[in-house]
Amino acid sequence: MLNVVQIQTVAIILVLSYFIGNFQTAVLFSKRFLHDDVRQHGSGNPGASNMTRVFGTKWGVLTFLGDAFKCFLGVALGAYLGRWWGIAVQKSAMDFALGAYIGGLGVVLGHCWPVLYRFRGGKGVACFFAFMFLTFPLGGGITAVFALVVFLFCHMMSLVSMTSSLLFTILCLVNHGQRPWLWLFALLCTIVIVVRHRSNIQRIIAGTEGTINY
Image (cartoon, rainbow, N blue to C red; front, side, top):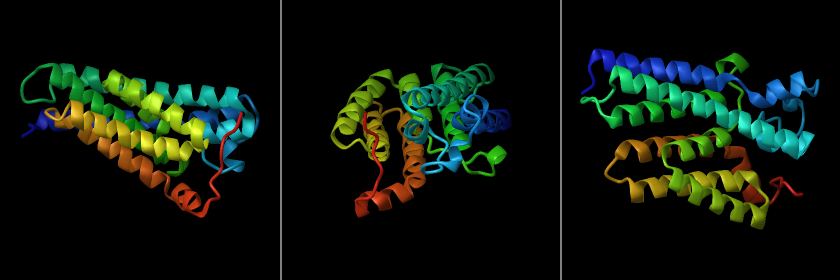
C-alpha cells in the first residue's frame, strides 16, 4: 500500500506531466510559423500526421519531435520525483521507473485531452513512441522497425500507430512480465491510442482511410 506522501507524489507527477502534455506542438507551430491553424485543415487533428498532409514532411517531422520531447520532459520529471520522494515501498531503482511510467502516461493523457484546448488534442502517438525508447529501448527499437515495415506496406499512420503500440505492449509483457508496472502502463497508453483512433478504425473498415505518400 502507498502511504500519504507517495500518493501525493503520484498525484503531483500526473498533474504536472498532464499539463506538459497540454502544449500542442502542431497548433503552436502552425500558428507561430505558418500563420495558420492545422486544426482547420485535413482531419482537424493537431498531430504529426495531419501536419505532414497539410504542410509537408518537414513540419510533420518537427511536430513529431516536439511531441516526443514533451514525453521526455514528463518521463524525466516523473523519474526525478519518483526517485527522490520514494513512490515505491522501498527506495530503489523501481522508484525511478514507476515515476517515469506515471510521467509518460500523464503526458499522453494531456496531449490527447488537453484542458487548455477544450480537451481537443492529438492522438498521443509521438508521445508514446518516446515513452517506448525511454522506458524499454530494445522494445522501442523493435517496434520502430515494425512500424516502418507496416507503413511501407499500407501508408496509413493510424494503422501503424495502433499495431505498433499493441506490439510494444506485448514485448513488455514477454520481456518484463515480472515487472507489471511497465506493461500495465504500456497497455493503458495503447488503450488511449486505440480510443483516439475510433474514427480511423471506421474509415479503415470502410476503405476510406487517408494515406501518406512520398
